[in-house]
Structure formats: structure tokens, C-alpha cells
Length: 484
Image 1 (cartoon, rainbow, N blue to C red):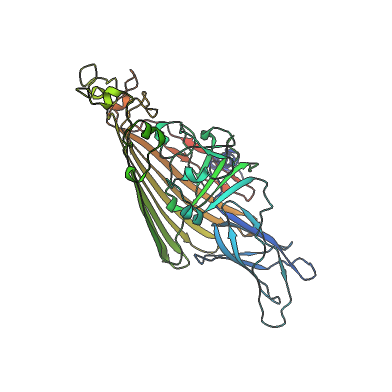
Image 2 (cartoon, one colour):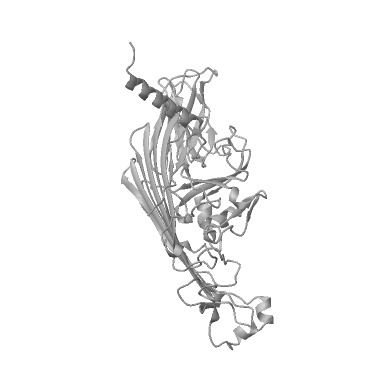
């Protein structure tokens, strides 16, 4: 039977869309992990039809897979955490592997040897050597949530944590807007070469490179830094692949809170300050926040939220004896040499440099059935910062007193096709814009005076990512239309 013209057109469009999704460059990474292995009996004969059950110790979420005709099983799409893995087959004693710890973006192999069951019995294996990933050759380091909480960091930032890993060095950010996000060089490459993903979604700055936004460490479950020999899904950079996973709620309500204070009264004078008989540079930093999470429906639906704010007030002294002796009659840095209302040759706020950073994350998880799961995560960041005149942080091409606001929304659906693989669809939108109350001193660069809400980056729409078990493929489209 011949197809109508309209039906043929829809079929061609469908084939083109599928081909585009298959060949498009990956835009999403892997934030989940996999347990696989082989099941045999005591005579080393393969056992098909064995139910392999993985239970998350914190959430109670259960994933069940049946071994195939070769006795092989694979359970992909598992959230990082601690699991109990159990086998069930009629006529054989159940075998249990307890306290299996999954790191982010890893594959662990657990083989089972089942014994015939003459009476009701169960074999539980504990205390074995730590499981080692043997399916990938990448060189990677991981930091867990307990390390994030307990490491003595002076700023408690993600970039500071990354600098502790082998091959990583914290460097000066490439742009003033990145001061709170931070920048880290891996293996001698530029800090802009990192490919960061959060919860399997893109977190890359399309303009300056490196991470787009930062997350409070209170919201992170763990992260992994792959610096060499990583797979093709992560190989989109000459630097490193950074995979971060945010925390999720569990079956137990839990929360946290913290306050950190730094002040110049609590710091010692350095050698040069003592030699100059000068006062310590004014400095004040308050960092506070917390988190809360728990079940909405036990073993099924969970929520988690975290927030953090950093208030910092610093001053940069001017290296001029006349200025220090207060012999100047006026503060010339605010006066300008041309009538008010026109372009100012210098930026305001000489001396003072207040800054404020607000970060928050909201996440929800739902296990609809054994094969279906949902995740939604919304994260935001507001960065208020004033720069002073004649400093290294000065960028004369852009406004100095600015507010940078950004948010990221991610939705994800996972569908487990038995041993055939995992279909994971991820939808994401990142948005960033800058607000300013001053203009640039460079002719032609003062557009933000008339457009105070011009987005720095155009919105980005990403196509779904299809994970076939060997890797993910997806595409992306950038909307360059003006935004008002």
C-alpha cells in the first residue's frame, strides 16, 4: 500500500530527527553509576533468569534486573551512594553483597556464585576488599560529601576543593565575573578548558569557558575529576572532565546549618604591614547557610534543598603617601573630568569593595516504578560585587558595580529497559544576565547604561540525551534572538 504524501513527509522528518540526535555532539554527561556482573552456580555453569536486586540503603529505592541467557546482568542509572545487592532464584540460596559504595560516573562489577538450597538459607558477603572499577581506563579522583564537610577550607568553595586533587592548581579567574565561581587549571592546561556537568547536565560557560555557576558545597553529594583517558562522552575538552552530583532526600529527615566568620581582628599582621607601621587592611567575611531533606512518600518521592550566602567587605589601599595622610581635599576618583551624566573616566567606589554571593539548590526525586524515575533540580546564584579603581580586578571595558544573576533548571526521566540499557532523557535550561548601575569608560562600550538587563549569554535549548549503554548522544541549539 502506497503512503500518502503527508505520511511520507512525517516519516522523513522523524528519520531526520533520529539521525540528528544520534550524530549530534554530546551535551550531557553521566551523573549515575552502574553495577554489572555474572551469575554462576558452584560448577561455574551460567545461570539465566536470576533476579538481581539493588537497594539504596538511604532511600530504599529498589532496582531489579533479571540475568540474561549468558548469566550476565547490568543495572545502570543508579544514584551514587551505598547499596545492598541481592540475588534470588528458585532452588538456590540467596546471595547478598552488603555495603556496596558507588561513586559518581563509575561501573562496578559484582559476580555471584549461587549454592543449591536444601533449607532456607541466605549467604551474605561483607568485609571484602574494596571494589575496583575495571571497565574504564580513565584517570580520575573523587571527593565524597563527608570530605566536603570536614576538610578545613578557608573559603569552602568548589574550586578550593578541586585544588586539593592531583594535577589541579587554583589560578586567577579569566574574568572578573568569575571571582566567586573560581578557576582551576588541570595538568597545565588553561582553567577555561574544563568540561563541568552537574546532575548529568551542562554547566559550561559559553563565553569565557569553565564553569558557568558555582554550587554551595552543602548541596553536593560528591564530584569526580577525570584528567586523562576519559571516554568519548566526556572528551570535549583539552583540560579535564568535572562531574558533580547534588544531594537528594532520603527516608530520614535530615538538615544542617553552619556559620563561618573571618575578620581582620582575628588575623595576624604580616611582615610588610609591620615594617610600614600600618594598620591591617580592613576585611570582614561572613559565610552561613544550611540544608534540609527528607521523604515526601517513603521509598518513592524525596526532596532536598540547600542555601548559602557569603558577605564580604574588603578595601584596597592606594599606594600613595599623600592619599594615606589624607592631604587630598576631595576624592577625585568620583569626580570625573567631564560634566556629570556623560561617560566617567574612572569608576566609583575608591577603597571600598563590598561583595555578596547567594547560592541555593532545590531538588526532587521520584521512583515511579522499578523501571521509571524522575528528577528535577533548580539552582540559582546572585553575585553582587563592586570593584575599586586602579586594581588588578579592574576591567575598564565593562561596568564595575554589577549584579550577576543566573539560574539552571534540569528535568530528567530514566527508563530502564532490563538488560538492554537505560534510556535517559534530560531537559535543561541555563540563563544568566547582568545588571549594572554604571557605564564603561571606553567609547562604544557603555551599552549597559541604556540596556540594564541585557543577558550576557543567549538562552540555550538542549535536545534530549539518549543513553544506549555505550554512551550518550544529544544536540543543542542556541537562540540568538534579542531578549527584552
